Image (cartoon, rainbow, N blue to C red; front, top):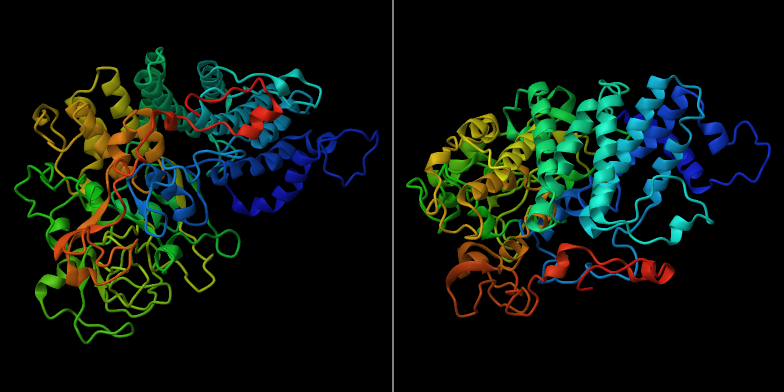
Length: 616
């Protein structure tokens, strides 16, 4: 996506909003449906506005300006992450947004904008191949948006044309989910065959992007149908395998550095990236890294999710002889999956004489274990070397040095890069990305489709089709393990005792496939989609979240939710840091109706044929 084209969006948006044809003659300079379409370049210009779907506020997994407003939200809803500054309950499951009189994503404005383009293709001065290409582009974008509508609401109106006020469909009922999904799949299959293989230039929608969406959508729909008892799921899982394997052939190499995927100045040169959002200085920027280097960053991980990461021998914390326990942060992080250290800030402590402007190595060698492991630098300022994603010791946006990690909000005088429980999320953190007190200055690109997700889609679909073997593990999961410094998955070694902490209702091998997906994609917004399609939301969300093991002295005497220590009980001198109440004990546990969002009541009031989802 060439972001400088975004200057045209305002004009195109005006066309979408004001689609009236009551004038017989139009000024030449007026952009309307009668003048906007005709040539190939007209469609190319209009289509640039459709790329806004990746930022669309009606989509849960979106690239907002910073993670806590976009990608992180889906993992907070799933219980993978917590927001330190929110109420004591999960912000979706416990009703701060789940019920609604309006909004909730029940919005078809974007669908209309795509349909306007599709409606004008046959009237344009294009060859048959060009018409098929632009129809395919439109189908891709409409399918991407409909995938969200299906995931939220199940049955939704299927709108494949521009509707006027007099069209009966405006007041029609919801279309059954399976019919909508089949229509989306048919559109994507058409697009795969008819879109230009290379798209319209570098980093534009092309055949591989379509296949990546097929891989993602069919895995979601196939597993939803299987675990929610809808039937007819095998065709979707087989389609996931087909599309995934074509992509695996086209992208045989996995990026060797897990951390750079979210901190790269140019994802166009990173192996395995299929489509990405390009950020350009002074044109379109974000604050993904900046936010994580301020006092505003609020994403942290609970202890039970930290425990999900394997040790380097490929075994769990329950069974690995490498694991020395979680009673100090040093042992918690030691000899673990390296993706954990690149997602959650590992521990260190600088010398007692260190300041935010001048620091030295700690007096105790134990306190520098992770400084050495992660790559220490003595530079006091933003080094500015593109691609250096994790430079230690950590620094805030103004290069003020963080003297110690964990950095607890209840105790530390440094309130940047701080959290309540000790496990601070910093996947986007880097020091080369220009930072200032303005905030919107980051230019690290962000992936939209990448081969790592596809490999995980393939592994899961193969298992659901009873086709997962060691050969499949080697082609998928074991391509991800080396740069995580984790031993390969050996399928024959995975039995009921492999992880005694797993959800006992899930097959042990499938649990390990899902574990790999969670840790590989954590912080990328897939969590809430996954736990709902797997129909295992209670296992993840009904837990009372705790932070790291700490002493009362370490935690300090904060005033967190009327707790005077930050531990579970004021009389405790040591324990896991209290984060939030037990949702089940407080009568706020997961309900089955939450698997689908509530249809806004105002939509039903406007159209009585629109029915409500079960339980709402």
